[in-house]
Length: 304
Ligand code: 13P
Ligand code: SF4
Image (cartoon, rainbow, N blue to C red):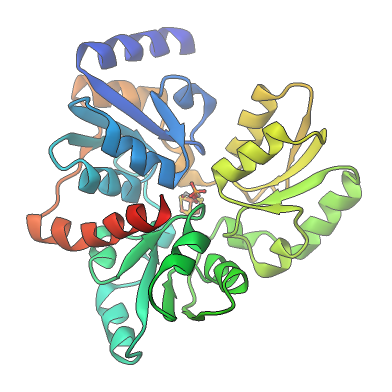
């Protein structure tokens, strides 16, 4: 049944010249039919490069918005219209403008997990794999980092030469993991390396053997000579790794590491989006697109 659906999807995407872009948190059934699978930064680059006329995005809304900004001449469709990232909507643009007015001389760095409307009032975007590099490369010493205070705190420790202010926001999934869960996982798997995403709280990060984005974690685990790993990010990564490296053992750090928004997209959604009966076509006013794109272009310039 799954294979039949995958075959039908592959045929439809070929007939209609559609490029399927999937985040690595998507289920294996979805990543198997994708033309490209990656982290947020890699997805942005892939959206910019493809010459297909339609991009079908399996991920969450802000990722489809980013793809649209980078490929405005293409149709960009979000496979499941309900897939949103709760962190992306945590801060209102008007509030950030007020905070900015109180901090003269500060540049605002927005995590890519934000709406286009919020990006429009910020100076540069970052992803988890590019945040440290971009903040270091920015020709500015005072930075307001939004919305993820955990990623922001991690960047602050890596770039101590800059003054970085944070606001209270973050990923409800990663931020829910506790230091006690780390201790319990360590007790259970004493020989395993702990690999965590920087959206986790500082008390979790300080116990990690490696801190990195989803692609960073995937690469580290695949190339490491070690044989056991505790994975501190969305549990799809544990599954993908276990499938790719059957000679190694992978454990998810916490059962809370399941993002419902990333899991909502099914093969049926992809199929319906390809037949035109489903999906959400991303549209944006030219004014919003132009303002928000400044942030994205800066991210690619400073992060590449
Ligand atoms: P990365 O893909 O940049 O690691 O981000 C993880 C994430 O939470 C995406 O929603
Ligand atoms: Fe958003 Fe967190 Fe889900 Fe990523 S894992 S989409 S940051 S809620």
